[in-house]
Image (cartoon, rainbow, N blue to C red; front, side):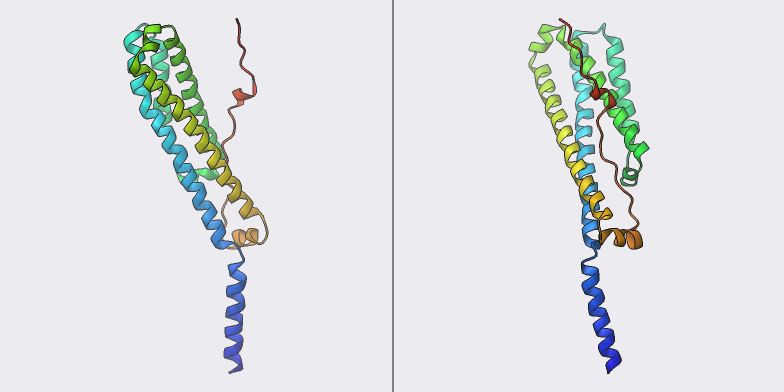
Length: 195
């Protein structure tokens, strides 16, 4: 009888101890990172889907700007070739490559919009304005999605590095730190405006 009571007591102590070990919290935090990454990908996909319409609209007015159109098309193609899955979120090089491709696409889009500036009748066109507004809204969504992803990464990374969760992670889960989005290195230099 004493053996059964000891076993029940040990099981009860183990359950109470494990409930405070952070196992479930770590799992929830990792799922939040995965969901936030899905939001980032969805907003980038929305931008990629808008680009062909924007290029076609500008192309109708500025057919001699072929180099710009080629740059945008190639940048969009590179972005489409880089596929990150959830396992890649632990790989800083994979995240950096993805960010680099997205930065190149952002730069190409900026050049395309500069071309559009040279055509007042294009800028006045309803289709172009609608596409430009959608693209601007999408860029804002991308920024918000990145911020939410970084917040989820911070919560996750903190949860696997603080006690007692760190022990749970080290002994049971063995999850690696997730990489947050970081600023494009070119963003450190303020753009020069010449009048």
